Image (cartoon, rainbow over all chains, first blue to last red; front, side):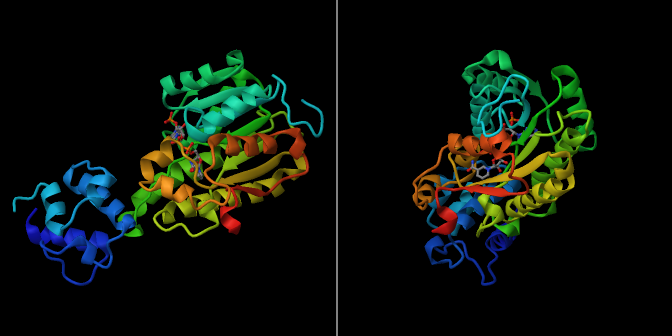
Amino acid sequence: MNIDAFLDELAYALQRDAPIALDDELKDIEEWDSLAAMGITALLDRKFGKRLSFDDIVRMKTVRDIAQAAGLEL
Amino acid sequence: MAAVGDLAFTAEDRVLLTGASSGLGQAAAVLLNRLGATVIGVGRDVDRLAATKALCPHPERFFPERCDLTENLDDLSSQVAVWRKSHGKLAGLLHAAGIVTVLPAALQGAAEMRELFDINVFAAYQLARGFLDRRNNRGEGSAIVFVASLAALCESSGTTAYAASKGAVVSLARSLACEYARQKIRVNSVSPGLVPTPMTQRQYANLDALAQTYPLGPGRPEDIAAAAAFLLSPAARWITGQNLVVDGGRSVA
Ligand SMILES: NC(=O)c1ccc[n+]([C@@H]2O[C@H](COP(=O)([O-])OP(=O)(O)OC[C@H]3O[C@@H](n4cnc5c(N)ncnc54)[C@H](OP(=O)(O)O)[C@@H]3O)[C@@H](O)[C@H]2O)c1
């Protein structure tokens, strides 16, 4: 998956209209909360086959951290 | 059968209990067994069923039955007849098997919802239909309890599909209660608040924090088991079609 497609998946999971960039800080994303983090846990598992714990996700700082966890070549 | 008003059971009181291999169902199996009932405990995992048997104070009155309840939903009511033939007529049905998925609605589509409904609702309905067949139950005084959830009644973001399935379970109990009152068979549901079990430990990342929001503090599987055992017992002979909320005061806080 390329970066744009990944960002689209992320926007869908977060139900976010505004654009998301790799270097966005998660804490600045309005939709980022514990439920969203659970959603990202599921997204990484289902779409990327990466099993991370909820704690792994909440420790992440930026969108890039999620992309790296998904195994994207950055 | 034990006397009216009693919260006791005899070995002739056979309870078909799903979810016996874990969590709330396991606690209910152990309690009912301790109170004198014979428990036919259903689950998919034989090792965990054996663990439940080992916890029972009267293991000779616990009969494990391995079954995936969603594998063949169309024939599940006939499966109740198979169990009745091997164990004898049933006095109780407790459906404690179930699953939950905590995810934003955006990530829970029809497939995920169907999976939840299969075990939480369709299996409950099919088991009840099998149990309510006159050939399979002991008639007057027999009782069904479904484990629903507080999610059926209160705000439950992240578990919308699950909440809908549990709402269906509450309605199932209410309508079946009316349909079978003539036969003096009672049907109720129990709606637990959040209790630590393998399910909730898997699905809720913030379980400890959530438990702090309960006025009476965190609940235990035994608290739910006690409510279910009461509703199955002759002590509840005049209670039917109800949904008993067991949540440490959470829903009224
Ligand atoms: N814990 C809570 O806080 C809470 C709150 C409200 C409501 N509830 C409800 O209480 C019930 C029990 O939950 P729990 O917390 O005790 O969960 P749990 O520890 O995960 O136990 C679930 C049980 O369901 C059985 N099960 C699941 N799918 C099955 C299938 N397809 N066929 C046969 N058995 C199946 C499992 O058996 P195997 O793994 O052996 O197959 C296990 O015994 C559920 O309906 C849940 O929705 C729980």
